[in-house]
Image 1 (cartoon, rainbow, N blue to C red):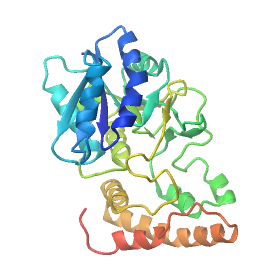
Image 2: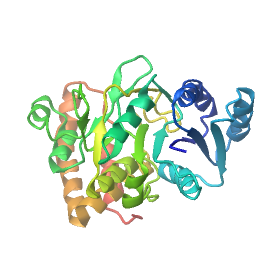
Image 3: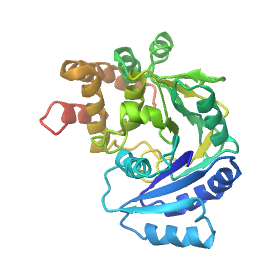
Length: 316
């Protein structure tokens, strides 16, 4: 096959079924052999049975295959299950398209990504805008984390954000034309087989969050380009499996452990220490600024948890 779409499911069967309503027609319309593999990350509910019945009832089995997995190793590990399996077949996919279970591809999105990949052989990853279900822009194009980005992110103050506009992680406003970026959202990400062959698959030390940043960084370090295509968007519910995007909630331990792992891998122990000091110091200033202005966009206990998960012994 030329293209393999991978969806990792964890207790989101109803969203996957909604996803397939738009995805399957797109795959069938392509002039190439394309398949979709759904990896169930050991969901404790009836996801596997629900998905099996849906695939059969809607006659999706010509393009959709379900792979029940025995453990939940997180997003990256779930994708690796399908990637490994596909690379062991005689028909190794040229491209892998990672799509969140609670997403819906816009018409032509996959074809636009494939066309760019085929016409730009130095491209390792392409992505596009992620829209909320009401049509508003959520995210899509990003820069890699850095020290100035940590300052801007921690303070999140109008003047500082303006000064550090070209250093902040989120590229805002989003690009209005196809452009090279640092990384794209793992909710909708196409990767070439050649990039995976050189950079490797997902680092399974990341349970959830930062895994796509890490993979894009490694792919970039191997000499490939990452592109954002504004015309290749998806609609995304967001936070269905984690609940993190539904409200301002306390970030879970796995988010902090993933953050720590990424910064230590890419900046070393000293760099991680400096980032943490900057986050705490500038974060305290930002916290007071937001409180005085009555802003409610601060995750509860954020600075306390940065201290807890970085200045006490814990696993990397």
